[in-house]
Length: 200
Image (tube, rainbow, N blue to C red; front, side, top):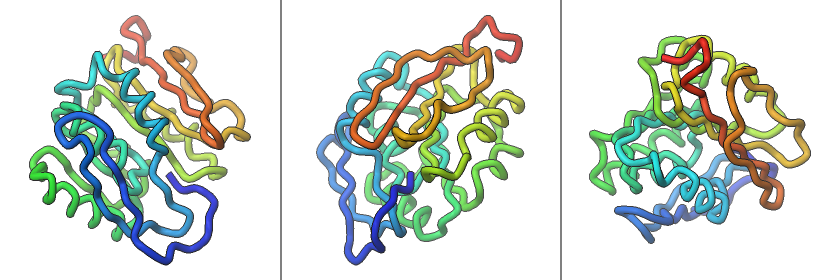
């Protein structure tokens, strides 16, 4: 979830919007250009996910601050795997899980998203993919999710990109469920339909 920006010089704050930990503020030191998914985007996203988030098994690829996965856990998700190449980012997420007394519900992994997907123990109910902008990471991640059968039938995949980026390339049988633009962020929720050949 990297965004263009200057090098960080101080702590940033992540606010959990809803659920069990609603209003909790968690401090983190962002990597260069790193910002959590904006509050208004998260609020809209989790309104979309409200009917299915409870007891969901989630995957937060390119986790960064952990904003999406932590919000999911707060709103009743059963578990979440957090993936990021930054050791510092993953350590901060681990600290947040300890602070929230949710260590048993979150698993943290320091590695590239594709490396994790190659050996992931799926399937997942909801996948969040918010990669650094302008790195062309969406298409290979979506292809690998599909190829490995890592999304359940009727599961949901959230993709976040820059507004100036082209529409993400996803497997042809995925269905666009919802989409919206907020400032520099374009975000889309895709469904992995039960009637597709790759469904579990």
